[in-house]
Image 1 (cartoon, rainbow, N blue to C red):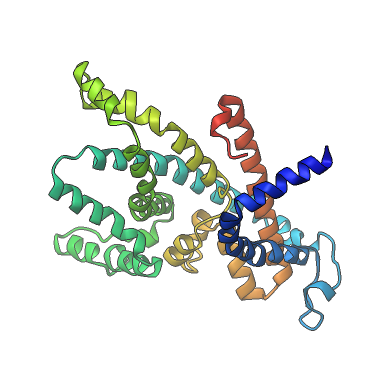
Image 2: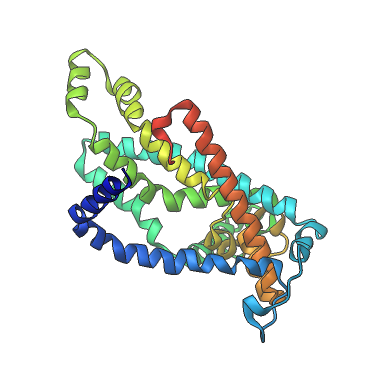
Length: 308
């Protein structure tokens, strides 16, 4: 029995040897850059010594985790990271699906191409450039304030109004990621059988009914998969977004500081690698637990849409 099973496995390996050879470089890359570095997680439980290195440094138990708890940073960091990413996921899926459907239904070719260029371009713009543009437009001496002052109004600086920043961050994130994120949904829409649309037209269904009863139901598997993949990073903030837009503005940190920026500032200001590793470990555990819970919920709803 065992020998027959081994022969069967060997036959499959021989049969798919070309595909396995093609997979080998990607496997090596993943092991070197993803799995081997995971061993460095022990740094979260050590007091790092430059002379002794990661594995030679003395153990310190949970001492590196105490800073986030004692400094009252743990709750605010977790809250900001979770809330922002939940809003990004929900609004991102809605806007990306809507934009993909709009592009697929547009019949005016010229307008369609202009819309694609306008929406896809922001993805390739650096967050540094986005930050500079925002400062020049919405800053204290930006274009917007110059216009308001010229018209006799009172100047308004976004950087002086802390509570408006959650809205600003969400809007900038959607503006930058919607075009590129809609590519997946556009591809899924292109794979929908045109015969269903033609049959719906014959039955008298207008464009809205075709979207509601054909396009969106056919996009449901893609939406579930993309949502699950996004949930896996729900406790990982977009470092470029939160750091470049806010920089080290202490007034804005209450509403914009996330775990990633906290880890970076901790390393820059204190050079405490153990403390930074502890924050990263805490973040990774939260992401792992969240994706497992989300996958279990989806499995109960429809097992065909799960990741594992």
